[in-house]
Length: 124
Length: 270
Image (cartoon, rainbow over all chains, first blue to last red; front, side, top):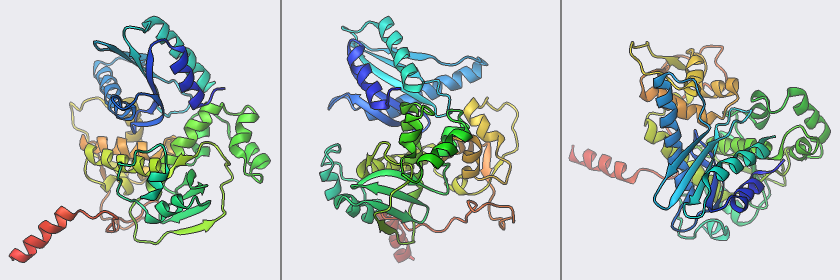
């Protein structure tokens, strides 16, 4: 029964190595909530840009005829991990959680697991 | 731009074009009430936007019930119980009908969606009624600057996808199918299937229970792909809903100076 702000806070505090988190509407690219980031990392820009990543992947799957759903998308940079988790909302909002992790501190498997839990708390 | 300076969330250097000078002023004076514009209403409390409604967009009730988050009875129960006290949002959460997060997300979705249309350029003067509040009650207020920023961002996004606004308000019809069309993603397909030459973007949004802006995005993408087109220059059939309005020349708050200059130069060169 968490609200959005509490969910973002929980992601920041409970997932080791998180430097920023955003909840994003992937049709409009609007960040419904952000936490962290900072001057050198504009989460709202990242949120809007990553909607294109999701859209490209969905289109590719459509081209391939895959009838699967995306659970999450992982992007590994030199020093960061970016984790995108699509929310399975009962509504048809089309939202995703976007997590920026410090690669030297983060544990990917744990991060994925905890993000799943936060998603569940946000919606049910 | 004092309202933006007064908002600690927005950097002061962020000079936005003013979408509505009146809204700007109301935010600065921390007004409470309803700002009624041509295509929608913004509800303010203490200078922040607490809710928005537009005839062009599905309301929060539609977003909540169509997606299956809430059943119709649950919604009407909440309106009956808490509508008079203007605490419908709170009641929905407290009574366990809707999780707090889901309500916030739907509410923000509806708010930004309606604000996008309410802040659309218009020639009609806006009116403000002090003291009016909305029965949904407090959910999550948003600074005026954030609403303006998002509305501008959305306008740009639409123009980047396909710079023709014809599909935004006219009835939509499917273009003749070309063989070898690339497959259409599921969410766009749902929109495509409702393009029957009668429904407008707003009608499709209502039918699908998705925000009207999402439908505009999908329609522009479909239009860019040549899959849909607007029904143009037709006398409105009797069945057309109130949303099937004619596109009037828009009076914008920020005229395209470069274009006007080019026009003037061209006229002088004649």
